[in-house]
Image (cartoon, rainbow, N blue to C red; front, side, top):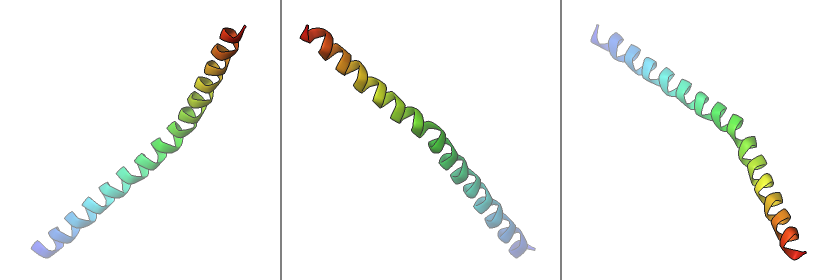
Length: 55
């Protein structure tokens, strides 16, 4: 009986770890484009400030 419980516990723990890993990957894929877009916006804002100060 103890062996079956141990195997089930290990399988459950592995499933939880797999789900957490999947969610982390999913969240990174969702947030990564936002970071890239924000970097582009920041760069453009810096260029605009440089052009305004140049005049």
